Image (cartoon, rainbow, N blue to C red; front, side, top):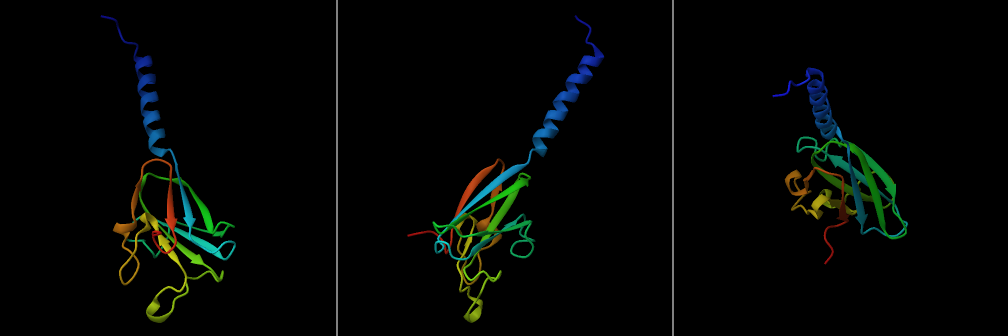
Length: 148
C-alpha cells in the first residue's frame, strides 16, 4: 500500500471545496422579454421580487426601459443568486413613473407578471407569479396577460 502524501491530499481537498464554493456563488442572469405595448410609446418598469414578503412592496431590483419600435422591452437582471423570484411589469404609457389607476383602483395602464399570471380582483399572488431560477435564463411577459 502506498503512503499518501499529506500535502497532496490537502491540496486536492482545497481544490474540491473551492470549486464547490465557486459553483454556489456563481451569479445568474435573468432576461425578461416584454411584449404588448404600443410601438415607441412610453416605458416599461420591471420589478424583481425575491419573496412573498416583499412582493409588490419592495423589489430587489427595479429597471426602467423605453418601449421599442416593436412594442416591447428587454430587461437584464445580473448577479442573481439561485432562488425563487417573481417579476411585475408596468407599462407606463404616459411616462409619469406610476401605475395609473381608475375607478376602484383598477389599472388604466397595462401590467404583466411572470408566468403571465392574472389576478382576480387584484394582482396575482406571489405563488402564481413565482418561478425558480437555478440557471441563467429568459422569461417572456405579455402585457395584459396571455394573447388569445
